[in-house]
Length: 258
Ligand code: COA
Image (cartoon, rainbow, N blue to C red; front, top):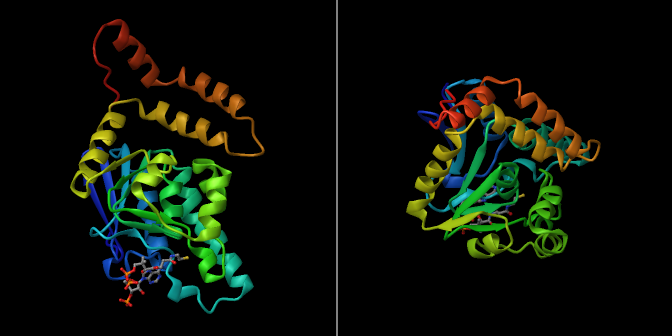
């Protein structure tokens, strides 16, 4: 499928999705959000893909936020719809994808850009990356899950500070605050993501999906995460991957989860 605002590249079990509006610092307009939804849906349904990397084109920006030019004249109902639709088709969609998604933050990740990175299952960053939720400087608040996911990652106090000041933090600060797992020079960012992805791809994809559901359950108010873990744990015993993984261990060989 041809996209106008994103690139999708497949490398064996890995799919790399690149947001590609460099002249607008990869800002998320409506069309880009819709294309990302389609791309994530496609890779989710593609049995050959086991891990997904999400990044921005160029070396300056991952995503510099939602496209301000598209919503500056919106009223209340349009604002509500913008956040609701975006969360449904992209941000929550990515967070609940049953295949692992790694955000490669290669520059500015601001507003909707940081919210998109936070919706991914984990994040790595280049040394030049800068992150923040500057929405209150525009008279609005984060609307793509930022008020919920930032405190989950950095704690309530730091999230309050970041959102209230609208300030950007450096990649190193983001690592200290557990917003990203690793910080590396720009040229090492994708290689590191691919190394992590290939380690993940060697493991059982059914077990990884179960782990994503169980970990995400920790953040859902209506469910007990421990109950979900018990359920998912039990279900694993009915899978081919469980038979292969345990048999391979007992036969002292590497498992083959293809
Ligand atoms: N929405 C729409 N356009 C954006 C954008 C956004 N969130 N972020 C950047 N752009 C556009 C700029 O308008 C500019 O377009 P132009 O060349 O047609 O004028 C282009 O991207 C380059 O950005 P520019 O501001 O010239 O780059 P810079 O290096 O001087 O500054 C930033 C970089 C990231 C500090 C600055 O672009 C910025 O503050 N962006 C908005 C961040 C934000 O508030 N995001 C949250 C949105 S809810």
